Length: 87
Image 1: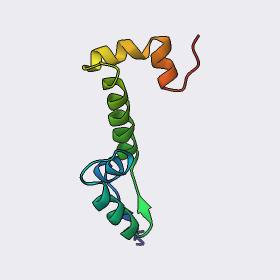
Image 2 (image 1 turned 120 degrees about the vertical axis):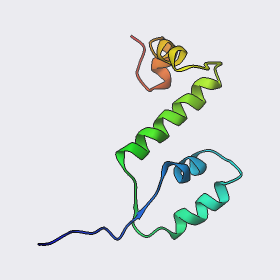
Image 3 (image 1 turned 30 degrees about the horizontal axis):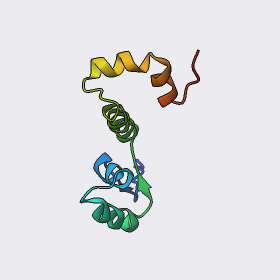
Image 4 (image 1 turned 180 degrees about the horizontal axis):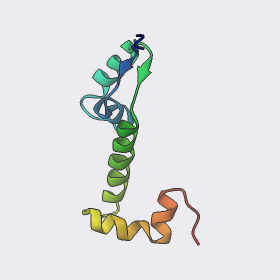
């Protein structure tokens, strides 16, 4: 029986988010990222990063809850934020 084992380095969303957004941990995240051999991420990590980024962008517009966010994303401005052209 053969089992394939990856030799890559798994990167969690905390590393990627500290690279995307300037925080007190950004420099450490850069160092960890540069040390990673064959960096790997999962779909869940990508989903988490998209969600956090979307929430941050929405909060800068005063949107505080997930319910407000859902409502906002149905507006022209919300669709534009997602890169969808207005209808």
